[in-house]
Image (cartoon, rainbow, N blue to C red; front, side, top):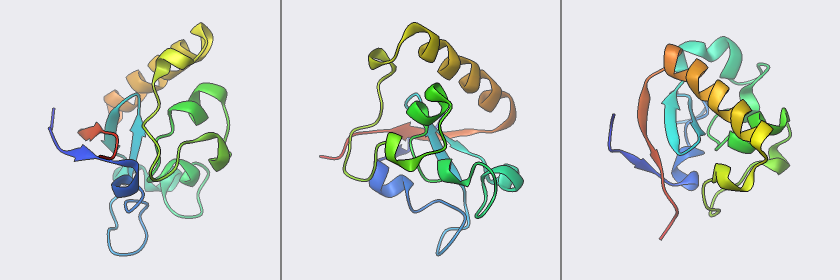
Length: 111
């Protein structure tokens, strides 16, 4: 696994738009390169709300609302604060992502 570290502020630069065409998302502390899944995560597509974000809470709660996900300057999500069902949902998503996309780093809190 890569040791590259991303704050949420750094992660938000990777939505498939602008300077970086790379699409990254954070889940349960890991950062995945989902660029090859641009049909899902790319600008204007069904799950584009997760691009450049820590989507742990969004996926745990089945929500596509940005307001449920931490933003730049926030700490990454800990699954410890989620219910058992939500934690299991996150772990299932994590297994799916690990099958399809490389882990390119980890989420860290800003200093």
